[in-house]
Amino acid sequence: MTKSSNAMWGGRFAAGPDAIMEAINASIGFDQRLASQDIAGSRAHAAMLAACGIISDTDAEAIGEGLLTVLSEIEAGDFPFSTALEDIHMNVEARLKEVIGAPAGRLHTGRSRNDQVAVDFRLWVRDQCDAADGALLKLIQALIAQAEAGADYVMPGFTHLQVAQPVTWGHHMLAYVEMFARDRSRFADARARMNTSPLGAAALAGTSFPIDRQMTAEALGFDRPMANSLDAVSDRDFALEFLSSASICAMHMSRLAEELVIWSSAQFRFVKMSDQWSTGSSIMPQKRNPDAAELIRAKIGRIFGANVALMTVMKGLPLTYSKDMQEDKEQVFDAADNLMLALAAMAGMVSDMVPQVDNLRAAAATGFSTATDLADWLVRELGLPFRDAHHVTGSLVALAESKDCDLPDLSLDEMKSAHDGITSDVFTVLGVDNSVASRTSFGGTAPDQVRARIADWKDVLG
Ligand code: ARG
Image 1: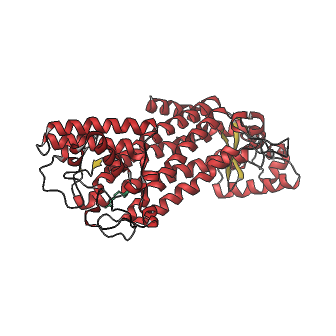
Image 2: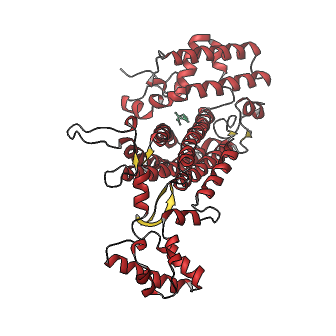
Image 3: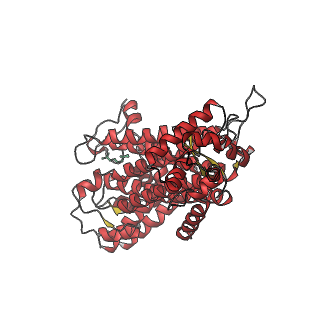
């Protein structure tokens, strides 16, 4: 016996789909997450149809009320989602028919699932941009609090993961504030660009009904209707912009997570992670593992993967809608869920971590980290060209290395052996505090600069 055809579009079909066809075709397993957006879109559409005289006020009212009933059923968690009804759009409409009867059949006037899914998904992604913004703000505030508490803690700055020059803890924290602030602005840009309404594009060509697209756009908080119906149903740039912003943000978190993994290791001991953000080992009782940081470090994999997956789905699709585009949602859902989780975990870890001031300071003095300060002193005090100063300093580093000591441990005579103009004054620039305090150029690591930038951020963030 063949299954009966689909109740929504089965008019021309004698038989229903094969079970496997149904399985590959259905999106209700995941697009049920769009329920509230779908219902908001339908309510706006129905109200507009009535305002334009396309359906009666009575029908529109019944539809509007009925949709709220359906929404409350879905929110209560006992809605019988049906795979035979494919997706959230048809599940909602079919249930509306059961709830209010005949008027439900008028809701789909002048629209299509193509503009419906485009509007639902846009609304969902728009919310995620707002959620990312809020979560980033919390992370930024946690970093600023760390920066403020440790504006003058001295730590090594690295290049090539080799100690390069002393920097301040506050400066390092603020570097991430800069990154995450750019992430916020990327989400804001994406949000602003996506905030146009596809509703009313109908299947692809627009509609012959005298609809008011401005009205539905406004009702859904969009700036304006999209100007080309073909583009409106086939555009997924908004999802891709979200994913690419999320990818960059996750990449930033991954870098910070990597630093936390390194810093919390027994070899570095730069930070102590709180118990809340550490895990133990089932076999090694001494272990204290930075699992949250490691997982955040890994999240970029799936988030960037989602970005690549959707780019690949979209490339080469002819205009307009193709069913390929149904593959957009799971990628974005997964990326968004994991981005939010990672942002929240990162904010928690950052606010709880305790910089180990003495270890940071001791490490800052290793690796001849003030060699540049010595070279700069030779330029400033003795008038040497920088290249010559670099050379003289290099020979002193080699001397210290051969004696297995640091630059400040060399005697004045040893210093003079490299250049006889050197005086005991040179030792004042070889300490790590002097080194960081001297980096007062705008954006430099000096504690005063750090405090000034913190004040700037506080102004901006209010
Ligand atoms: N479930 C579909 C999707 O997610 C909705 C649009 C279906 N449109 C169509 N012409 N079959 O893309």
